[in-house]
Image 1 (cartoon, rainbow, N blue to C red):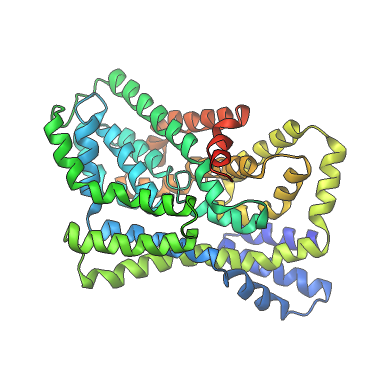
Image 2 (tube, rainbow, N blue to C red; image 1 turned 135 degrees about the horizontal axis):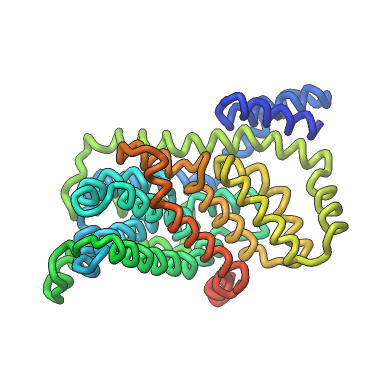
Length: 426
């Protein structure tokens, strides 16, 4: 039954069918072959999406859309420009810091790429090669699923069950996220010096920094309130997402005064559209994971791997290598839904910290969003910048290599991932 379902999914996916429907038809084929009542399919689908933690994803998406609709990005950019604008590669630094700020609101890479790309690419074209500018925007956008709040981490925690908390995973991403930003800023400076790009922006002044900091104060405070409340146990991740929506609306309506009532339907529609993709994947994939469970596939896979090696480091190496390949070909949400229920219990059997394993799992697949041939961020940036894929790849590969370097550092030094969440009681 499992073999039939997996084979059917692979055939349909290779034929170009959307992954959500390929997963659903594969589950339907497996159920029909096994003789199980087909009514299990809609029951499992409904049960999968009828989830309180899952509500955090559309709410964080809506908060991000409201921030973009309220033109909050411009104040964030102005503040970042006041901090690092007048250096070689300063515009790239501004983009990366703006991406960091946007990531702390939206938690999604594609939404970040759309917002940053449309905002920053006109200025990038004036000062840099368009391929380099596009690579910087794609890299900054990829901070979304790593810096809390992260939609990817919410999906992982949902699929892993009670073994890992959303708040713990959020905290696990902070130190590696900061390492990524610092590393990418250093790489951007090196490329800017090598290419001879002139400095941009106004000279640094404490007066301008204070002015821009005051203008952006309410925006900077938002992730502090939302993430601080989640970590402090004041509210759950879903409640924090709802607070983020209210906060983003207030900022856009009465602080920047750029968000109108007429903007709300468009913001809600775009958030719903993006969230529906994740919801459909989870709904259609859950019956497939149900088939895996009743055939004891996780247990059999665990026994097979433990029979192959008793070393947890070898197991981690095998999973990381597999995810590197999977990330190149499979959409990341589909990968979480299909693979987390299989490998998270095995990692626990090896005694691996669930937070450590969960973050490495998410980080590896997040990098896959920038790797060809199915790197979704590459296609988004090619569409926004109107450049061929070959030109973008020429500039983006050093940033991909840097992200894999940080992944290896987190793998070799687990405390980079676990120290902060453990210190906070996770």
